[in-house]
Length: 284
Image (cartoon, rainbow, N blue to C red; front, side):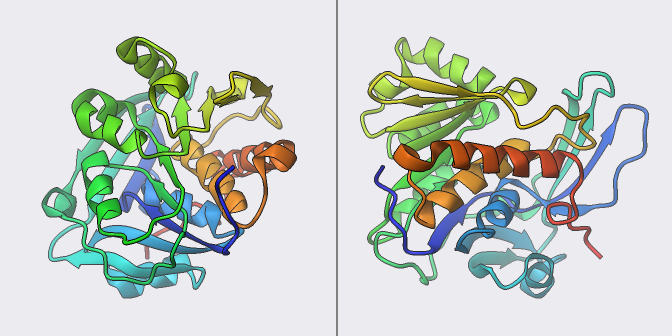
């Protein structure tokens, strides 16, 4: 695997004010979320993270720094005048599947990524969120290291051209079952054959487990560490991905440590769906 250990990782993704609930129940207290936040929190258990994204003046850098702690650097988080991205999710009490979501993009809709420095040569990059923004961000880094990408079905459908260009730069891809099937049907061949730089795909399938698929054709299936009833399913996949890329950036190897990596990532994903306080940081 091309990831090398320099104890730092760049993460680009969304920063949002989130509220969640099950149908016919009250929303949770607002907490700091989004794929950039949750991936960064998970990865920062293993490495220092340089996070990039945008927040509104309603949060600002000072409050964000207090919420996230010293292991996540915010030099490349922009602050724009206005409200931060807001995301509300409603889940089925019976199946824990998403049944309704509401978004207010706020300052995110006027955001254009601008790299302010603070990166090391060859530093690994993880990208989630809007693929057009992610491409703009990567193009400003002089010497990016290996790139990992997490897909979103929304962007595969709505901004497919940019999503495919972003995946084409990746060494590691994170998908869920629906995203992988979408790629398979629309590409007309296996993603690992279509995207020449891809070395492996982590294809998650909720409570059923994860399939790690390698470019040489072999795959390894892992069952989840334990089955639990979710209290908040939001961002479980982001926490899984953040743990994986954090461990790889810290020096773990897929060829030698795959069992430990997947087990640790699964354990962290369980924490987030059970509303662990490390991941569900309520905004004061």
